[in-house]
Image (cartoon, rainbow, N blue to C red; front, side, top):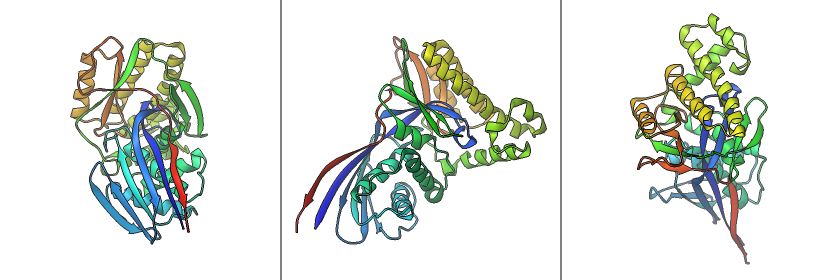
Length: 351
């Protein structure tokens, strides 16, 4: 009889710029953060998955062979087991413990961190190895779609998996090319501040915004908004034109931000963050009063630029602060850390 215990860590992510571009075949510039989710998994006899969310002091159990639907954190665990098995991986009975430092609904992608840590731990427990980065990211996306009802793109999973200390990753969602980009911020630092308004993608307007983007592309005869230009927008109704304008201009801002980093131009990077926020607020209409108040607080504190981050409708605000400026008490300094990885704890075999 063999007993295997393993542990996986997956980080949250900060999306420097490029919001709602992933499912539109666009660009984003993101990085993994130091904080994340740890999943410890242990093989056990029987047919059940026994899961515990340590930070919530909540537990769950379900048959590994046929996980039923659920809500909240339980949906991620059940979805991970079900989607791994559907992909042909032999996930069997296990005890799973989850702990982390990323608040749900914060805009730091606690959901993708949980998905990726679960998948890495369960795959290692099964002795199955791991899929490539793109395959694992798509598996996490299927969990979001099928088990949470959130029609998300691949931004969060790819940033979580491709993270590296000192670097951001420029993602082209049309080709899925990942380009490591040094994240050097001369005389500046990045901070995140919770707005105090949490969000849940599936229960917010996120899915509706995705539908509007698809409709806008269809109306101009394009496969996606990646193939649409500002000149095409005159044929669209006013609301759809604004949605498309955000995506088109945001793609441009992502590429400009990468160039700003390369030349160390923090003033221009800050301006791009401000413009991104304005576009998300006015054209994409995903802001809420709590987010606006948080952006204003960061700007008043001296931020070179600040914008909402994540799907919108609440969550976290990102600020680019001068290194010598005091930051708000509730702010967290964020810097790039390692991507999702595995740390096998040990293997004991006996008869």
